[in-house]
Image (cartoon, rainbow, N blue to C red; front, side):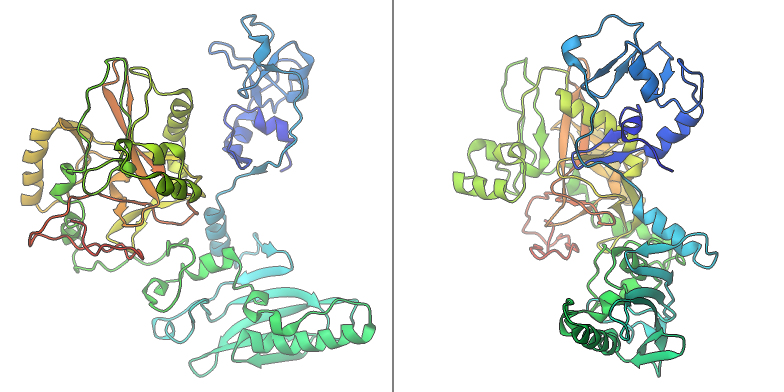
Length: 523
């Protein structure tokens, strides 16, 4: 389906992020297909008047023919409304920037895998045509991989590459991986009846590359192929992101110790049910209790409320607190350290202090917009899967920008005293305890009534932090928001620092995050 850029940009469902990606395009197409234009009467009207009680729809060319106004905030107001600020309207609609449709790559790849044999979907990346991912039996896992690649038996692709016989022609090379005496064998078939078999992909392709390079050298005035600098795995397609995501999703691959995962180990395909570590699913919450410990409800690192004017509302960034309870607003970080943190990609708001000042009961315009967008789209951003750290974890479904709001930590808001009583009851019932403190008096209990955010695991090197946003008429309705500390790739597990207080007791909680700077203990 081909769609004009402005027809999408000015649709009410479509949102453009800072990198030019257009989200919710399919939803906009579905709605537009059912709407008739108020001017020409034909279907496919994607632009709607922004006014609440106005139900007029237009095609983009039809909208430009009317006296309606296109506003700078990407809204359209039809000619029947006169209360329009002309200085906020646009005269030209040129999209002089790079824009593209954001797609759920993981879903497309999973759909491709499930329909490989039907031939309805084909994956092609440049000169690589993917056919079949293959499989690995449990006893084959150790022998059919190395540190960087997994070699499934039955894997097959077609590579279009320069002919070793004619310097001006290209030809198809059928590449596959087979089992030869419990080790991987790389097979390349070409020119009807020619076949190469080697124990490594580079060795197999090197014979073709060398012959093709010699042919081009004889022809003269042609670029060399440099066989010694070309990877056979790359020509087999194993370096392609879509292919490596599928190979890392094969059953049993998550048990490989010597393989370096590139996509967080989150499976894209329907796999057999995982075996519970305890042997009994009902025992699983006990393991989560080790992480969501009762200390999580009363972290001493929480900053006590300071004396401020009644016209100020505090917004505390939990990522800015230290384990010892200090904060950067009290000049706990010198200028050189701040400069280093700013250079590393952290926003000035994160580096310069945990407090921001807004009017009472209101979020700033940009934060309010982000919050409303996050409420509508969080299901498109995250998904639950088995975690490498502990139990279940929350993963990014798509690429997430730095400082973007990801999901709200929801639950029942209760007093601290009630939280202490519930915590004891949950532990007596062998339940996992999911609680998050808002301030000294209140906390959010997500144990029995909470959202997926409660499954975010701890890490000593987190990619997320939490921010408490005050809203409501009097600023007393506080929201706990999970935000991205840095750009997060699709398939990466979301983590944040639980910030437990350091204790010199026997009741230590082991940290299983596996980060390079892991402290080994959470408290």
